[in-house]
Amino acid sequence: MMIERTKDAKKIKSILSIDGLWETISDDNATKDNFIIDADKDCYLLVKDDDLVVGCFKVEAVNSCCIIAHINIIPKYRKKYSKLAGLAFYNWVVSNDFIKKVTVNIPVLYENVKKYCLAFGFKEEGLNRESILKGGKMADQWIMGITREEIKGALNEFN
Image (cartoon, rainbow, N blue to C red; front, side, top):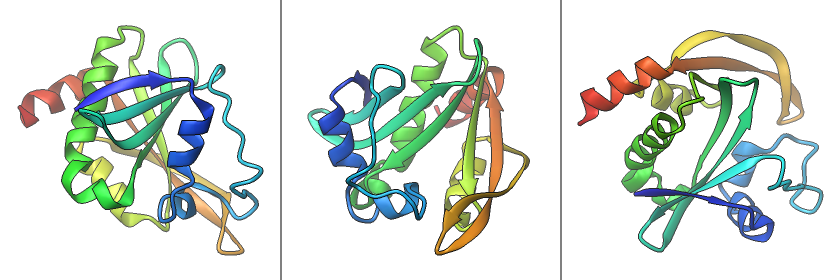
């Protein structure tokens, strides 16, 4: 698995708009038509197995040492590639010395995503109440995080 940065907004949008993925990453007010990709401001990472793109991660700087990650694996590749993609992401984080902390926000509707993050060593750090519109209702999001040192420990456990 490899992680490759891309600024190709058309490619990013085509991946994130895939049925089955789009519904989980968007809120009720977003549409595939009004979904804007700013690949100059935000960092988008393609997750690849040779030439096969299995996902796209969005990484945003929170400050000079912390990022928020949006991990998006294409549904038909999740079973085969979710663990490998997570490990590739952790290796990417470790290769970027400035990153000391990674956080994620997960709508409480997606218990499976929370379990995935827990399996990778993320800790539940809080709850962002009524912060995303899903299914016509405001939903909470779990705030989860992992430190650089915890990522290194997780990589050692997985290897």
